[in-house]
Image 1 (cartoon, rainbow, N blue to C red):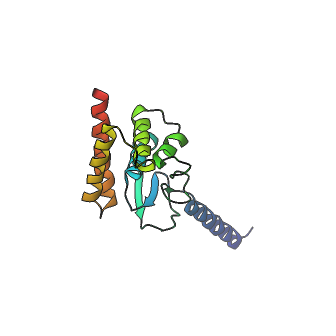
Image 2: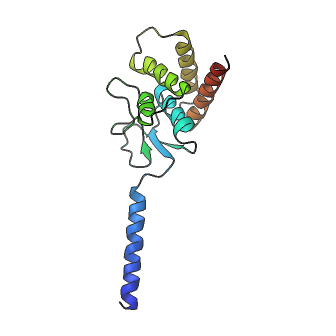
Image 3: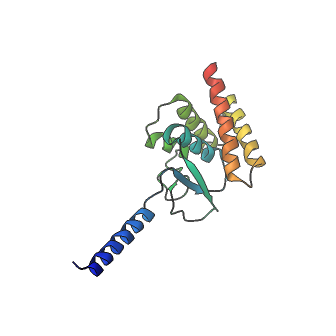
Length: 163
């Protein structure tokens, strides 16, 4: 093969590798819509604490088709609310998480988001009120909403584990 053929082959290989890397999900990137609710924050907390410590979150306007990272809590995602389960329950199930805090939070999320009219245990109501306050205070910035929500969950489950 001549010099020109080698250059063409190298360029074609490089383009092929670039195209393949663009189509693969970026590791550690989890994507969702910017609308906030208890279950979305709970799902992200479980991902960050029990699935991927290096998880980064990127937000898109509601109704956007997300084609980047690992989408969650949006239509077509592997981890979303369906079949009577909250998204956080789907995360726990998909990754076979058995940590008590993650399982408990997923159950609380189910109570709040899937059965909103049922009478909930006092600790579930208390945690929900705190997260609603976080969402209202950070409604324009989903990243800050996640960070503040993560702090609430960290405090709640750290306190709970000391009892």
